[in-house]
Length: 122
Image (cartoon, rainbow, N blue to C red):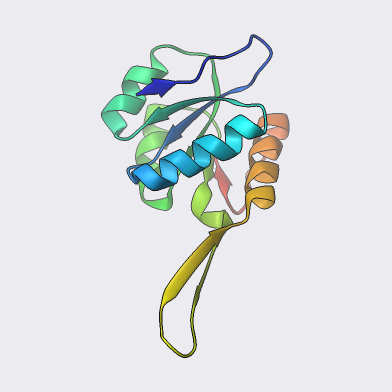
């Protein structure tokens, strides 16, 4: 578990992803946008981090949403809702791209209103 040094006025977001590359990417995106980020790779780490308190939302992937909702009552933002996938017509190679702006907008919406949307649940 890693806690980014936070300023008092920064919103605390807990990111729980088992994919280290995804965890790094989301941490980078949110830190650049001014969020204080704590990361967890497992549900056990998420539970330990939750004891610290102060979080405003959790970012995770589809497969962990149900378990996280049982642990916390915070808004949960699904990063997968902002991932665009495609396959090259000629080679069949698959690629994906994170729509960073859409992801950050969904998180800000969750923090501001607590609304449920395609990538947000409570």
